[in-house]
Image (cartoon, rainbow, N blue to C red):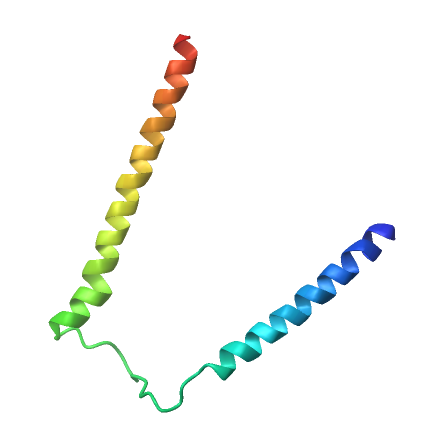
Length: 83
């Protein structure tokens, strides 16, 4: 019961902060800016670059980075075993 008493003020504070964050995000929506409706038109080159090419490049770079991290970790482990 004492653990619950310690957590209760923190949980209540987090609840109020989450409500404030929601209200702030709603207050920042701009109504005058037109919002696109419907599916993305891939006949335009800019849409292909933005929605297909850039995410693919980011994903490929992530995979390469992850592979390099694994190599570094394996190299450190081999060096520790050899010592």
